[in-house]
Amino acid sequence: MPELEFEFSLKPDSDPQLAAYVVKFSGKSIVWDDETGSDRVVGEIHGHKLDLAAAIVDGIDQSLLLDSVCPEMSEFSQTAFGEGGCHYLQEMADGSLKKQECSGLVYINEITVDPDFRGQSIGSALMGKIGQMVDVEDSIIALKAFPLSPEYGKRVPEADVERVKRFYERLGFAHIGGEFMVKQANLCDTIKKRLAWRKDRPEKEQQSQSEKIYV
Image (cartoon, rainbow, N blue to C red; front, side, top):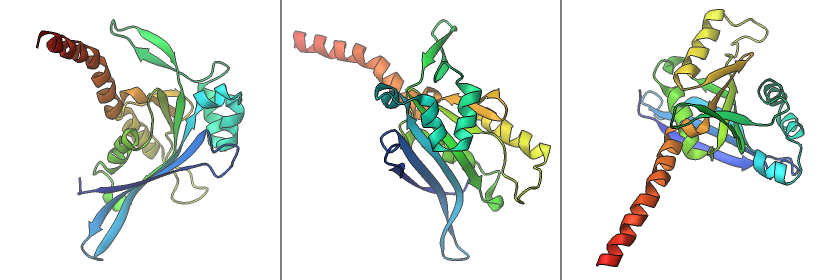
């Protein structure tokens, strides 16, 4: 993989009624191009983070909120959520699965990689940055695993569709219907480290308190 730099921007939705619950994010992966003597954008990612918990507390209907962001997200909600709201299955210590309610949704609208740089893990690197740049804890990450056609109206080859699906499967995404895939955001490396730190914290604090007593 080439040496990459990343730029991310986050801003509230331009609609005042959505701004309290919807944040738009954009990210770029950049390399230095010796031939032109300038930076070159080789990958981009765009999406939305929805604070579903805040919207519910404020009495905002979840379906209406999702419908208001973009048509694709409305289609996703009909496939994934049904009438039960946002949930994900969390694997417990005994190996069983427990249904957990999501406080947020991170929806990736688009991820692109420069054709000259494909196959160099640039897409994976961009996806890996999501957990660092966007607050994804207790959320699910969702997307439509269907590649964009380079020519408008031209059908995408099935081999390209399968390639894209395999790419997201390697990143931990699971199929939920249609072309949609989801991933529990707490499986992201950044969040797993944070949760591991919290789990270990009480024991360390207790040990610290004992040491103070005996000093």
